[in-house]
Image (cartoon, rainbow, N blue to C red; front, top):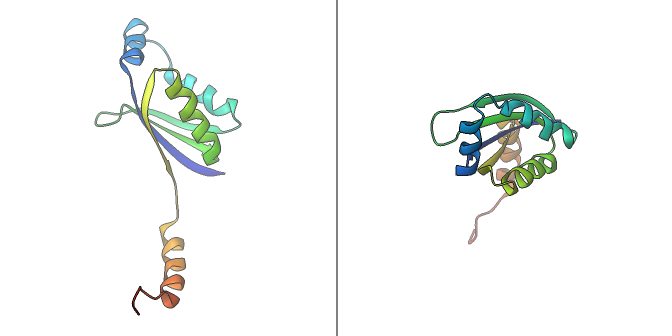
Amino acid sequence: MSKFFLMGNFTQQGFSGLVKDPKSDRSEAARNCAESVGAKMISYTYLRGPYDFIVQNEGSFKQMAAIKLATEASGALKNIVICEETQLNDIANDATKVSSGYKKPGE
């Protein structure tokens, strides 16, 4: 399973719900979303900055895209960005192999 980070924002509707019920456990809602598609939520954290929250999940991109689609369609969330953990050294190793045989246009 891959690790993914979903960062996003609450909409006006989402913030209104939080003000109405400040004890609402959004981490539990996020956990339910992940589990409903067979993924696993690792952590849920509120943020200060351009995003309101970040959720770390284990699963597939398809599962993360389904979570994004459903939660944004609810009207409570927006701007969800899906980032996947990667191994940059492995990518650089493969890039070295590619670059040894790649020729730029005009060469």
